Length: 133
Image (cartoon, rainbow, N blue to C red; front, side):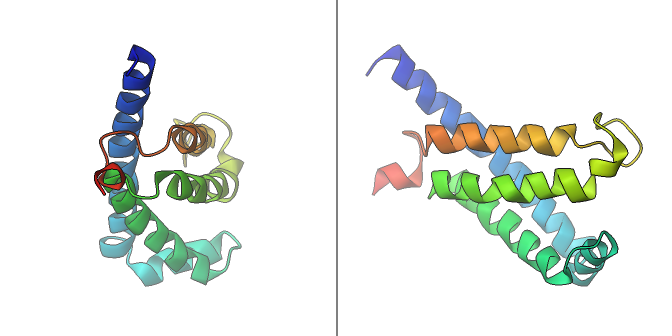
């Protein structure tokens, strides 16, 4: 195995762990802090269907767990792209670019969307449950 392949495996592993943990935390916040009904209400308040709030909560929790485990990484990462672009457009688009703006600008979710595209290109990597089967 070349250094380049080792580096790609390490990059995939690091990106899976960090993004998986972040998605899991965001989903659990929606579940336990904002509550599912509160999350749906927020989505409705920004002009989206409330059901999309429930779906986002499930995608973040299940997707976060899948990324942590390294299962279906390419598909999960690609699924996260529209979630993140939607957050950038609908949740933060009116707040300008910089995430330090009041209400958070769109730079952070769009950056994470690009990270998810990179992870989709990398795939599971060597250190994943998918590679153990």
